[in-house]
Length: 306
Ligand SMILES: *[C@@H]1O[C@H](CO)[C@@H](O)[C@H](O)[C@H]1NC(C)=O
Ligand SMILES: *[C@@H]1O[C@H](CO)[C@@H](O)[C@H](O)[C@H]1NC(C)=O
Ligand SMILES: *[C@@H]1O[C@H](CO)[C@@H](O)[C@H](O)[C@H]1NC(C)=O
Image (cartoon, rainbow, N blue to C red):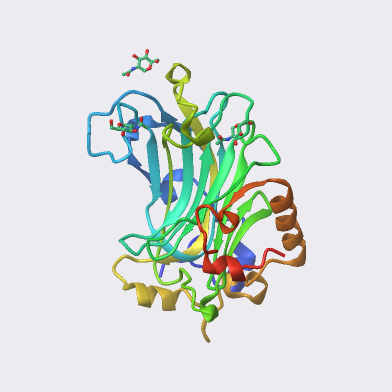
């Protein structure tokens, strides 16, 4: 077992968090799409979207003569915390989407998404989050942010354990997806996930419902990244998913920090922060979209929004 950033017992974590876990891009990640759209500047990585077609037509997101870029983690993980600092596309970013997410593979995959929907200059970026369970998503929430995400780097974090998935912006939780298995609702905790980010042209839907198109005279569109941190349980691909789930869960001989009781739900302070976000920044919640869902999705009946 490789110790270090990826697998830390609770006692070890107390000593090591913050020292080993902020890594350079290439220790944890690799480009998986359009290597030529990456720019490395010291500890910073920039990914570009432009309208120069790349020669390989098999790039799935290289649509209609445009090319974005994407990177993925070199390894897969179960449970823990993944944080990246991102500075989104400055100026006119309308039509572009920058995604940052965790995902497993296969038709029954799970996925935890941050999607940043660009906008025309001066208009607010929207942050869309979504959760896929067993291959099914349709759990979008959208919010605007309390800062301009194109001016500085901000931390975007996914915290994942057996009790909850929490989406966090800087130190503020913006969404909690709780384990409601006791109500018969499936919860994603059986598949290792990779960590991904990509930027692409989505002007058919992203900005103001697709009405505002990408203005290519403003290309390249650049998203910048730094401060990559993964403090999670690493899952060798040679090991079966069930065995990985067991390895990554606390037992008699090891305690993982993400299984500590205080990680099983938000603190009172965090609950207040989430309440504030929902009251002041949320612009869409699938749970209350009765046009799309005449029957309220089951987890919405049980998810407490405090
Ligand atoms: C790309 O082209 C296809 C087929 O012509 C079209 O359906 C789709 O809307 C286009 N996508 C974008 C982003 O322009
Ligand atoms: C873009 O700005 C408009 C006008 O402020 C706003 O209605 C919209 O929600 C913003 N975001 C997107 C992704 O369209
Ligand atoms: C990209 O867009 C610019 C600006 O609209 C245009 O001048 C150029 O011809 C386009 N290039 C390609 C390869 O489509």
